[in-house]
Image (cartoon, rainbow, N blue to C red; front, side, top):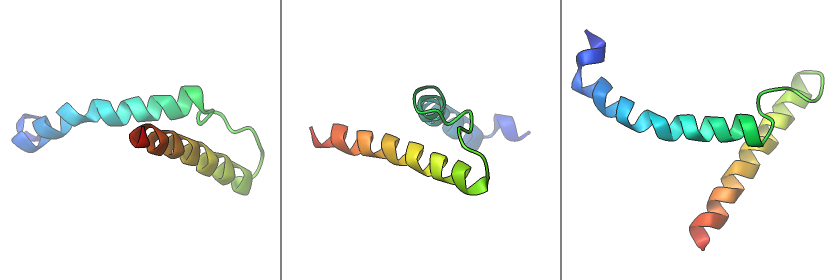
Length: 63
Protein backbone atom coordinates (compact mmCIF):
# COMPACT_ATOMS: atom_id res chain seq x y z
CA UNK A 1 0.00 0.00 0.00
CA UNK A 2 1.31 3.42 -1.01
CA UNK A 3 0.47 5.11 2.30
CA UNK A 4 2.76 2.75 4.17
CA UNK A 5 5.77 3.38 1.92
CA UNK A 6 8.76 5.39 3.11
CA UNK A 7 8.34 7.84 0.23
CA UNK A 8 4.82 8.70 1.38
CA UNK A 9 5.88 9.06 5.00
CA UNK A 10 8.69 11.50 4.18
CA UNK A 11 6.47 13.59 1.92
CA UNK A 12 3.65 13.65 4.48
CA UNK A 13 6.01 15.10 7.09
CA UNK A 14 6.70 18.10 4.83
CA UNK A 15 3.13 18.64 3.66
CA UNK A 16 2.33 21.02 6.54
CA UNK A 17 4.66 23.61 5.00
CA UNK A 18 2.73 23.58 1.75
CA UNK A 19 -0.63 23.66 3.52
CA UNK A 20 0.47 26.64 5.62
CA UNK A 21 1.41 28.57 2.48
CA UNK A 22 -1.90 27.64 0.81
CA UNK A 23 -3.76 28.80 3.90
CA UNK A 24 -1.94 32.13 3.86
CA UNK A 25 -2.83 32.63 0.21
CA UNK A 26 -6.45 31.76 0.82
CA UNK A 27 -7.16 33.61 4.06
CA UNK A 28 -4.82 36.61 3.99
CA UNK A 29 -4.55 37.38 0.28
CA UNK A 30 -8.01 36.59 -1.10
CA UNK A 31 -7.04 33.57 -3.18
CA UNK A 32 -10.25 31.73 -2.23
CA UNK A 33 -12.81 33.96 -4.00
CA UNK A 34 -12.49 35.65 -7.37
CA UNK A 35 -13.04 39.39 -7.08
CA UNK A 36 -13.25 39.99 -10.83
CA UNK A 37 -15.06 38.26 -13.65
CA UNK A 38 -13.48 36.49 -16.57
CA UNK A 39 -10.55 34.16 -16.84
CA UNK A 40 -8.01 36.96 -17.33
CA UNK A 41 -9.20 38.74 -14.18
CA UNK A 42 -8.96 35.56 -12.12
CA UNK A 43 -5.50 34.79 -13.47
CA UNK A 44 -4.34 38.32 -12.64
CA UNK A 45 -5.74 38.03 -9.11
CA UNK A 46 -3.94 34.72 -8.60
CA UNK A 47 -0.70 36.08 -10.00
CA UNK A 48 -0.82 39.14 -7.76
CA UNK A 49 -1.60 37.09 -4.65
CA UNK A 50 1.28 34.70 -5.30
CA UNK A 51 3.59 37.63 -6.10
CA UNK A 52 2.68 39.30 -2.80
CA UNK A 53 3.39 36.14 -0.80
CA UNK A 54 6.71 35.60 -2.58
CA UNK A 55 7.71 39.23 -2.05
CA UNK A 56 6.95 38.92 1.68
CA UNK A 57 9.15 35.82 1.81
CA UNK A 58 12.02 37.55 0.01
CA UNK A 59 11.87 40.53 2.36
CA UNK A 60 11.75 38.25 5.39
CA UNK A 61 14.78 36.29 4.19
CA UNK A 62 16.76 39.49 3.62
CA UNK A 63 16.35 40.61 7.25
